[in-house]
Image (cartoon, rainbow, N blue to C red; front, side):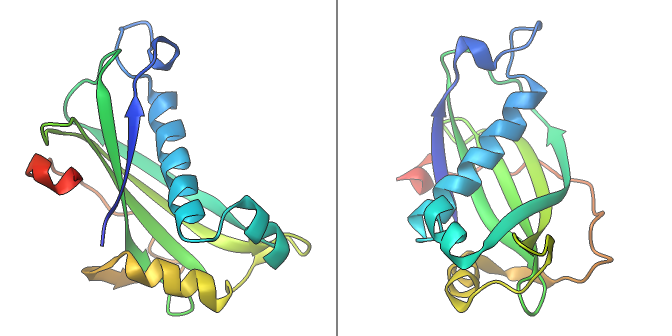
Length: 163
């Protein structure tokens, strides 16, 4: 299963070249992850109750096509890597225009931490179940050595998938 989150590109999201700023890509990915977690009943309030938080340790991007002001952009989320206990995860995000053009890919690798101990922890079963729904047959089993894989390639999709 793939999660999609839609954004309207604002003037403040642009850089001096008048296209989507690198920092905006980071923010769009982070907001997509929070929208996913809220949809799956693991938003900020629930994470606080559990005493855990997601931490991104490694993030990288490949860019294929510019995104401009006033465009709509759809950011996907899927789990393409996860440790056996889900303490380590890797989100794959793809940026699409509404007509299915693949503009960028981002990979964010992270861990769950115990907010009191500030150490990596295994998340509750509810988190593991939610994350498992967004894995694909290609999702790899990760360990601490799996933080550096490239390259990304464009992969346009049929816009009907966004419905």
